Amino acid sequence: MSQTPSESGPERDAGVSPARPAGILPASGGDDPSSSSGRANGANNAGETPASREAPVPQASLHDGLTSRTLLMYLLCLAGATVGVLLLCTLFGQASLWDSGVWPMRLRRMLTAAIVGAALSTSGMALQGLLRNPLAEPYILGVSSGAGVGVLMASFFTYVVGLTWLGTPACALAGAGITCAAVYFIAQRRGRLDPYTLLLSGVIVNAFNGALMLTLYLNVPPGEIVNFATWSMGYITGTVKWTTFTFALVALAGGWVALLLRGAHFNMLGLGDDVASSSGVRVQWLRIETFVLVSLMTAGAVAISGPIGFVGLIVPHICRLVVGPDHRRLALVCGFAGAMFVMIGQTLCSLVGSWLSVGELPVGILTALTGGPFFIYLLRKRRAKVEA
Image (cartoon, rainbow, N blue to C red; front, side):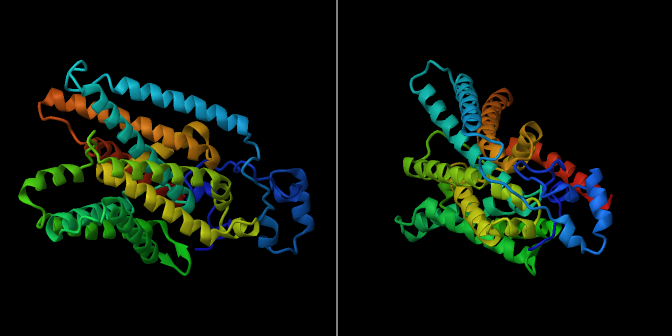
């Protein structure tokens, strides 16, 4: 998967602005071709190889250009906005707010939606930064469907085989992890990942997981088929088991903090594997760590809501337009933005379902309707950039 900076720059592989990542400084004026001293040095060093001139000496750390005070300000502002959106969303729904037990149920549902949105959006941001592919996302790469197979497998063991000790979170994590490994090994060739091969691998794995889920449906008790069908559309409820809810919350907290601490490493990786390795980033270990964290957070989200697509595609791109390509900021902003995105989407689905007299629509339907066109737009934009 090793790529030189000339083969894959940040503006081409990460889908972001070609600006130099935060905390990356040129080694000397000769490394900047836009400066007069750079042109002079280029003329004087004509005998050097291109690789010896083009690779700057990156100097970055987690705190370069981003102080703890700035992060704290981001955290307080985003947390306050998220709490405000959560409380506002609990005021709207199909049942009357003054009925007994309605508001606590809505609050728990919004908390579930917030966990799902934060986990999926942060996972999408991590995959896009790791693979330098703006189209990478847990749902597209099949990680969500793999976790879904794990959830249905746990239900199969519970209802048919009687193995009640085999919990939903463990099976969801196993399914997501196996899918991550399968997509990576199918798409990689001699250590490199082709963007379009990666997408095709995700499509193949998604189709295979879909067939497994349909097979498992045949063994689900008839009275539970409707519930599982609704769950597979991405349906958020306020009646999730506390054990599953706690697993999703812990998975989100641990994965989010770990990715936040790796923000500078993702910035370095945007310059290419060789530059990142020369500056002290353990690229192979970073890949393994990121895939494990993404599997963990996606498994928690799918276990409490079902597969919800395109959240990890839409939210990171919007956040990148607002705060820039620095992954140290993106890792923080994407989590809160994803939480607000899914909470608002869940509220809209509840209201629209009431207007259409069809009950509550699964939020996965809304994200698919908005994410499909957005994915096509990004795909065409990337293709035009490659052809140019």
